[in-house]
Image 1: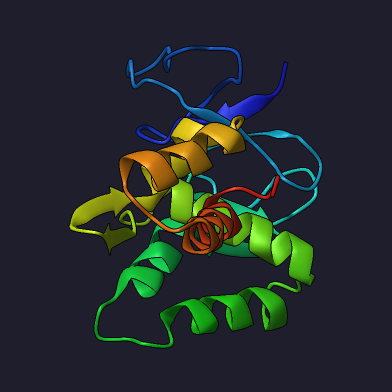
Image 2: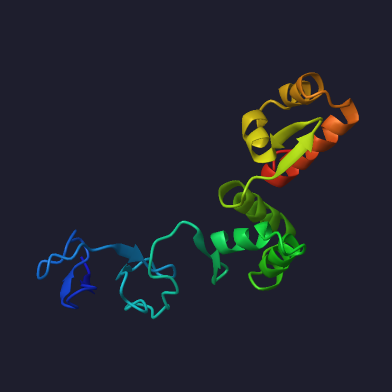
Length: 176
């Protein structure tokens, strides 16, 4: 058991307590990314190792990668911004230069951002509006059915259907 400060009344309480015994404030315990020490969400740094807490709320869109805090929702906004033609390039450069990701890790994170946080990419094919994200999810494990759908149901030529399928899986799925 470790003692932490209550974010509301700042009195010391057990890290196992679901709420402060003094004021009743519900306690959210997070763990230090450096030493796994329990920390109150109101602390500015870990009391054991001194590592700073960059984010004080638990948000699955915020990741610490190579010691750099990355907000995936903010990167998605940059990618989706219709006024920025270089949005994707800017995000890739940021992840490479600032965060230090190699090409493979960079592309995997871009796919996660596109899948979980970006607006879907729509493509008009023969008068049918296709949601590329939805297609990737639907046909992830059955690429033959995907080609069949594009050729027979949408009316695409084989070569164009294969190009679109490659594009979909490049954008959303690393198994291609």
